[in-house]
Image: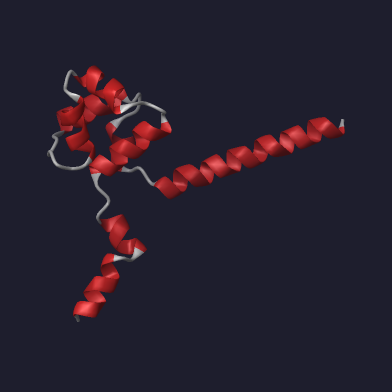
Amino acid sequence: MIAQVLSFQHSPLFKLLTMSVGQNIRKVRELKNLTQSYVARQLGITVAAYSRIERDRTNIGLKRLRQIAAALDTDAATILNFREQEIFGIQALITEIRLLREEIKAKR
């Protein structure tokens, strides 16, 4: 039983089920190439306080989540529903389309 629990803790499903809002906030911020310092300034808090949010050391309410979303130029639903695989899958598709366009232009 203990071995099953330990193996489940390292499974992709466990990681998906335990994905935190803080991790989602960090990933969205990084995708937008923003620094913790920038977001903290937008929120009027210290970098240390903002870092605690991203590390889930501080619980945030819906009001703060909406403030963070605004600072990241997105909405709360995007943060809550963030799925890294979907974002990077789309990015890979966009990159492939760009490369194909360049290839077509080069053949003309």
